[in-house]
Length: 319
Image (tube, rainbow, N blue to C red; front, side, top):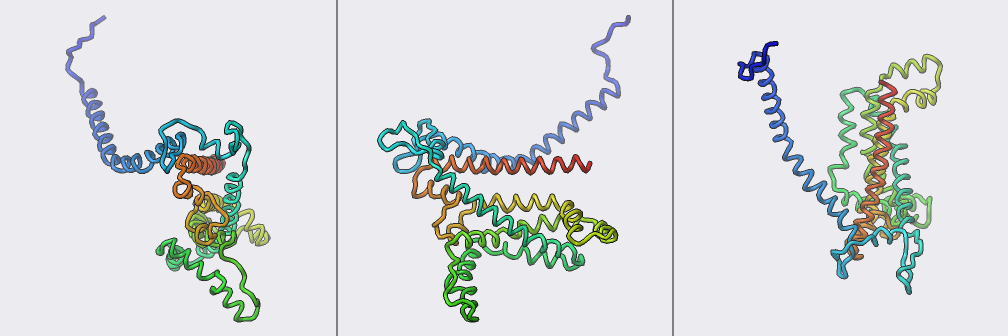
């Protein structure tokens, strides 16, 4: 058997493989160089603060704010239990913070449902317009984003207060004799969330409805389906990705909203965002605020996982 010469001259195929490897290495370095600024921003301003919050949630609260550098799980214990006044080792279950979470879920859920009921017809109307006029409707939907949320919330206060536009009109027409109390109620918070986040529902719905092949709708009517059957069996299933995306985009920000509940709710019924802000402000309990922020984030991640699971099954089902 002939022996292999280690000093043999590289063949043309070896040189081609080396050239390809060098080109691939340069492309990898080029991509890494282009992505490095974005990755640095994500790490510094996204991931690092998250780890700081996680770290703070396992420390003791400082006497005058801040933290004491001692490991503690009191922040998570306080979320569910109260310590006995005379014996701190005895814990009593307290649902007060769970009630605030539940209230936030209900208000955000109601706002999401109303956004869906209002946004779906609006998105369907936009998707069925001639292509030339769709951009105008998109412009009108995104117009509220041109104004700060704080300004929009103050504008809503002027509309629904006792001497506001709605009560003034109803009293002027004689429909009511006394103003209807709307401001500083859960209704005002839900209305404010609806006003603030409605575009987040309309835009994903429009993106889904625009892609629908409306010949399927015509086929449904040709088969003597009613309008309700066409809506329920053809349009809604095809628009399901937009419905899910819109619900998530409205529900999650609504769950952690701060400005709208503070201004329109008047601080009477706390929501999660206000409670977290209080802990970092007047409460001076940074570990507890960090723990609640992480609990809220865990809830949000659960919803995102559900969304990913549902969309994943749909992709597998439709190939």
